[in-house]
Every structure is written in structure tokens, then in C-alpha cells.
Image (cartoon, rainbow, N blue to C red; front, side, top):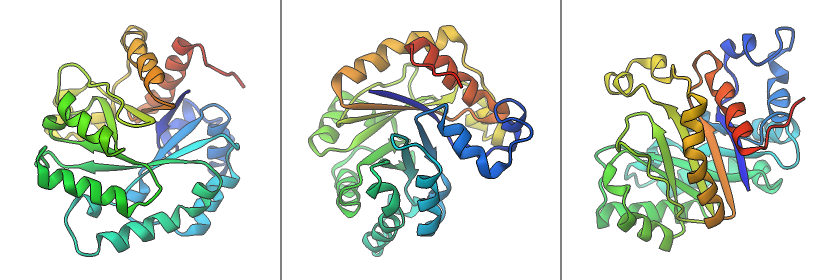
Length: 258
């Protein structure tokens, strides 16, 4: 199963390129969920939401719609209260999990977090803290983007985030399935802007149809190696994420109009 969506859905500039101009922003998620099968939410990276908010996400989306939430950034650091923080995070997502809509929690590790035993043990501890919420690990250090590191992640049921673009740690995206879930995110290929930290301009990139067609075989291969592949587009500026998400669905033969 391949499911395609975007990183976030509440962008004002999308009103002119995706959402109908007369559509109230309170109805954006319902509209979005009729066209895509998943969404990644980043608000939980900074703060844990109220349960009533996550319950609303369930109510506004279809029964098969899937969510990935970014885990609190403090979990990537060593803090004595990490286990309690992970439990509060998991408790807040309970309505989504109970409804069968919670695919996983994405945790981003910084570039200085290298592939070494101490750090690997920390990843496994976080996986345990999250209990039965699948952990998706995104590494800023290229040492983790190797068959050796992937083998260790697979043995411990940690999904590796496969990132295209962004800081471009590797010339070629490292597509590798390390669990029953494969996670892919297209960040845009303005690598110089990412290196310079040019804010929203980092996300200003529209993938060509040829660029997306070139990665379809990799996505298809991941589909053969695991139960579910979630693909997200993070190039949200000017609505380019939704344009590219629809383009990829066309390439996969999965585009549903309406």
C-alpha cells in the first residue's frame, strides 16, 4: 500500500491554488482528506496538543485516513523526564490511535547525532518509551544512511525516514525499508537555500514530472518490502506540495478526482 500526502495542510497560500476561495479554513482538513490519504503534522514538535484537538482530527477525516505526528524535539536529547514526556505525547494522540489512524511518530535527530552505540541505544529507549506507537527516525547525520545502520534499525523495528532533498546529505536519496512501515518525504532540491537557512524559501521548489517519475521505481520497491509506504511532500511554499502530491499519484495511477 502506498499512501501520499503532505507535511501539514493549514497554509494560507494554499487557498489560491488548492482550497476553494470560499471554503472556511475550518473545513480545510475535511476537503484535504477527500483528496489525499495521509498528513504529517508538525505542531506536536513544539507542544503536546489537547486530546480534544486530536479527537477533532479523527472526526474530520475518513476512516482510512492516516496521520504521522512529529515527536517533541526534546526526546532527541537526553533528559531524565523523557519517558514521562513520551507518555504525555502518546496519551494526547490516543483518539487517533484508537481509531486506527496513527501510523507513527517521527523524531528528528540533529547532524551531531552520529551512528554510535550510545546514540543507537538512545533511539531504542525512545522506541520503548513510545510503547506501541511506531517510531520513525530522521537522521541529520549521513552515517545513519548506510546498509549497516539500516540493518540495526530493522532488527529493532525502527523505521528510517527516507528524505529527498533538503540538506542533501547524499547525492542520491537513501531509500531503505527498516520496518513494516516505509516513510518518504520530498523536501525540495534547493540545497543551497537549506544550507543557508533561507526560511520558507527552503521549501520553494516544484519537482518536475520527470524527477518524480525517476523515483517511482524506488517507491514501488519499498512497497514490495513492507506493508505500507507513506509519502509526504514538504515543499509547501505556494502550494507546490499539493501539486507534486497529485502529480505523484498520477504517476502511481492512484489519483482520485473530486
